[in-house]
Length: 287
Image (cartoon, rainbow, N blue to C red; front, side):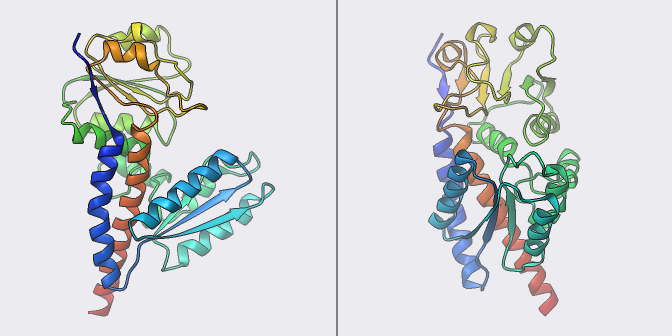
């Protein structure tokens, strides 16, 4: 088989961010600088790294960012108070609650407290439903990043059989809906799915979002399948056994440098769009 096409997420992310720089500059001239507020509860070192990466990405395109660090023993009520304050702060256009949160916090309640127009990470129940019905809401960033990679490389999904491995409410479920909305035939699979290798063997497109390193084996793939690895595990390892899958695939995302950079670019894009919407509303009120 020929060498597969490497779906370079860094290239996709650079393209998105170059456009965003110009939009941010234009908004700033009109008195609005897009601002992302990130909340981190506890002392998870990986989460701290992700928060710093997002802040750095904001700075590079001229956005503002605010980082809010809360103690490990923060209660749900205390977290909701912080989110409510950010909801009411007109200078904040996007709110991101870094996942995971400590066990005592009602994560779903916290997510759903974020105003829909500031839900730039696409984590609210309302946002999920709106995305599924193709209504106006910001999509979850990793699923949206997967679709951006598909679009950037002109991968046709219409009529194709896609299998999504994983059913997370902020990854597996929304990306399944997005693919279905693009007329793919979608199989959702998970830890309880029987005969998973046989199902994967039938798929033209495989989305790995299971959170287990090297989970998808090369021999499970149909020859010529497109592989989108949304996993990121310790040691920069994805959810697919890269070298073995590369031999079978027609196109594949690397880890790192695949879906990850596009996820951050999507978060920035959603925040910039939220700032644009905010400016538009202000202009209407002032007319």
